[in-house]
Length: 327
Image (cartoon, rainbow, N blue to C red):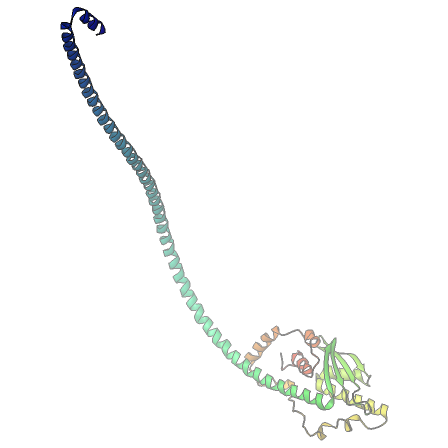
């Protein structure tokens, strides 16, 4: 253009107008091309944006469908697990059904057997009821005998207490049974005289006698022959009184310190013979009392376990197997 301008300047001013027209035409053509290019670019950009939006939408749909697919796969796996569990439960129920069927058959057989056993038990119950009735009758007889024995033993205990109070009589357990007396010696009323017996193999043995008395062997023979322990104790006390009188050279202590039973204001309790207990006892009750007596301590233990009290003498007499009335 500069070259054209230069040429036009050399040729004259008429050529400058033509050149301006050409340049304007070229500018218009250029502007039209630029507009077309802008429109084309705008169309392309719009198409690109539309395609991009479409791609984004498709991508979102794809992601959503992938999530749905994952959920469907998870649901499918759950259904498969549920199906496997249902099949396992079905197999278990079929096994239980078969087992229940067998159990019912076995139970039916057991029920039949139990019915037979129930019948047998009813028969045994009737038999046992009859036996119990018989035993109750025997127990009633034993209870009556027990009450009678209790009454008699209370009387014996009262007698022992009476003798202990007025005659200074005591019983001490240990190796054998020791009978202690006081109120015998005139100058020493608290002085003790004692005799110790031991029961072995249904026989009384003399272990010690302080002081010694005459005819002790004869007294033991009489005791083992008659089994009258009260008589033996009474005779021993009389011998001790005689011994004290001999030593003192005077009257017996019993006439001063402890007078005879006949002169004491309180009368001694009455004692019934022990051997008279079984005269009116039925044979059946006696056999039951013998069986019951097996649970009592042994003869040797009865003598060894006697306590140091007036009631101990009662325990010795009651537990001794030599007394027929108490077994």
